[in-house]
Image (cartoon, rainbow over all chains, first blue to last red; front, side, top):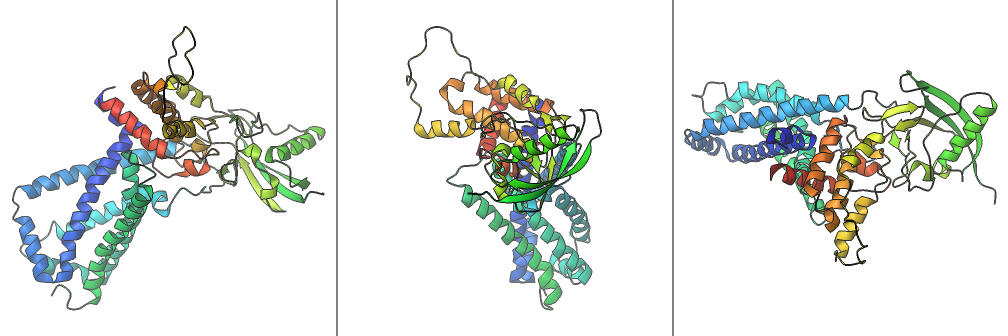
Length: 215
Length: 251
């Protein structure tokens, strides 16, 4: 079996989905840790951003890698969604879970699309913007607007739903499943998803509600 | 002791042949013994339909003791009905309430063809087995029993996978109509045992290839298969299949 045949098979696509998902998850964790600098004031946050940008050529290199992971994850996700819809041409009249699905697993493709839309808005707000302004000011300018803050908070709730399934799922897809560690994996990945999304949610919430936040 | 009697209304998928459109028909049954099995209830209905000169409901069944894997229909959205770890034939009316309304549908998947009413052609699962679910056995004198030592734990795991009766409930329950649990049980069972080693690599590749060709969906770790499986087969086997496939494909 050639490598391309392997990667195009059902198991191969699933593994690619897990690998790209794992890369995105690691990015999300790093992004979350970086963003939590906002809670230590604007100076801490701005100096973190400065240090990050002083990495030079590593930044665009990293961005390209991230873009590739995103494109792969989105393209595969949509392909799998369409393929899976075709695998059952006539739906059941009554659909009832036997107890396996979770709200997260049930909504993966839909939450994925919402995250994609969020991503576009997020990049316009913070990436394709005037880089001369300090980052803490950019955050304040955007998230002091109630509509943006609400959009960010709801998008992060959707992200929480997506990774509540994704964080565990990627281990299963990579073949990591053992009775000794399964409970830890399930609860650990769910806990990580909740904590991570909470960090992301608190930033717009604090910016909106606390006048002195990031001042 | 007199058994409890219940009334049940049914909505059953009727389809004359694979090409016919098919639709739901309503029937109501009164005074059924709660000790009756689900299939016996269909027998009662069919006797009545036959006497009335109507076409009886065609449904799959054979051993009626939960071991052959022949029976199966989706009852109110759940393959083999609402009881966990139970085939349709071992589901009894005592689990239902008087006046319950049951919608009975055939297992639905692109890779399964509806022959008639609730009778579903699941030979695509047999085709997957033909692609790799076998071991080579040398001819000659019969080997002595217990010549190959197998740790108890390994034997138990292989046995757990071998409990699969091939009923197809995992496919029917999967939101993506994927056969991953079935394939993983077969691959696991043989990959764990020494007798399965010679074909180990090819088995994983060929069975997954065959599954993809037959038009089953992809696994997205929804875990509905494990929840619906009448033999309680774990998705741990799917994780093993992923490892087996990757190892075989890459090296």
